Amino acid sequence: MWPFSRSRSTNGNVNFQSENERTPLVPASRNIILEHQSQKRTPLPVKQLMVLCVMRITEPISYTLIFPFINQMLDDMKVSPDPKQIGYYAGVIESLYAVAQLCTAISWGRLSDHVGRKPVMLIGLTGMAISVILFGLQKTYLGLIASRFIAGMMNGNVGVLQSILVELTDETNHGSAVSLLPVCYAVGSIIGPIFGGFLAKPAQQFPSIFGNSTFLIEYPYFLPCFMGGLLNFLAIALGLFFLEETLPSKRKTKSYETRSDVSQTDQQISVPNPDQVRARPPSILSLCTGPILTLLLSFMLVHLQNLAWSAVTPLYAYTKVIHGGLGLSLEQIGLMLSVNGIGLIFVQLFFFPLLERRFGAVKVYRWSILAFTISFLCLPFVSYLVRLEDNTTSRSIGYMTTVMVLRCPGLLSYVCSMMLIKIFSPNSQALGTLNGMMQACRALAQAVGPILGSSLFAISISTGILGGNLVWIILALVCVIAQLGSFLLPDQASVENVVR
Image (tube, rainbow, N blue to C red; front, side, top):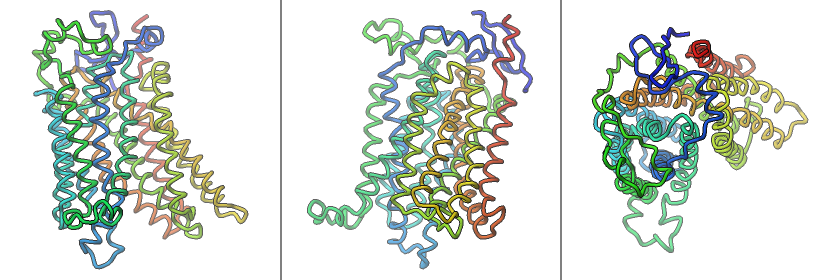
């Protein structure tokens, strides 16, 4: 356990405090968790959440819409004389997007602690809109890299959005609100590839409508990119007119004191107190406490293994059985992968709020990671079963689908990590910086995870180490390290004796 001092706040709650943190944003004690179970839940700020969901969905749409056509686009540009090398060039583009986010995520979060959440969100959406449209107008590989790098560099909205949710909600409804973020990402990840697959090369796919358009013939990948940019501009308009500022020092205090036409569900943004208004964001160094660094490292490892899994799963499913895979068709792979998205939505919407209110974010975070570990340890058995003589394709799909279902509870760790950042934040002025630090960790994992997973799978198959299961064992060990780190986090139950 990291050393924490414990003190009573003015309202009688027990707070976790590190030595240099005396104003915790959220009291993290077990008695508070128990109170949540009987305490009347504050209604969710529905209108604000609807605006935020639209603003969140547009980012994964813009990110994923290029996936269906990027290889064909690079092939058209003749970036490599060897078609087998196209995947490498595509990987460089995606890695640079993550590297750009890594370089700027903390800065965007810190800026939002100074100027407010709303302007930073609008800037991020504007950058994404412009960059995705520019992507569809490129004729060179360097142009693709530049536009994608701009998209990553300008987009720090995930961390800022998490800060907004903290400031919009309280301890009774934060779990329900934050569980919407992974659902929004899942929806956007479905819509994006549909745009890219159906709208690319429209003059060829829909000659009766676009066949005479010289512009779309000249720029065959512009239409899906334009649609992605258009959705970002729509989100900008919604945010500009309907998103309320939540940063305490930037709120329009008078409007919240005098407006009588605001519904009960939209009165979640409380009037800031003078201490919050005067407070300045703490330095990054002062936020690097043991619990926060432990959480960030654990979360990065969780995200790393999940991205490695996402990269390896299609390869493993497509590889022939004699080479150590499942030997499935593209249609079967697509059907199997859809289970993961459906499971994510189901678990986040229906299970997480109940579990978080019953056990608390720390315990759910710890034990949700275990689901990832178990799923990886099951895969060597799957590889053994599919090689049996009496095995069928339907059985292979069933085995793998079972593993993917086992992974679904592990996805709760993402929402828990967002809540734990709130718990460990010394005050609301540090939220943007802390969430920016978390997004930087996410970007680092995004830059490394897919390459690591693909490389480990190739080594496992080519060398036959551990029966070709080396990749699963290593990724399971990554999960174990992440879970061990989670047990170093402060436990709410440890404060119970102070309350008595």
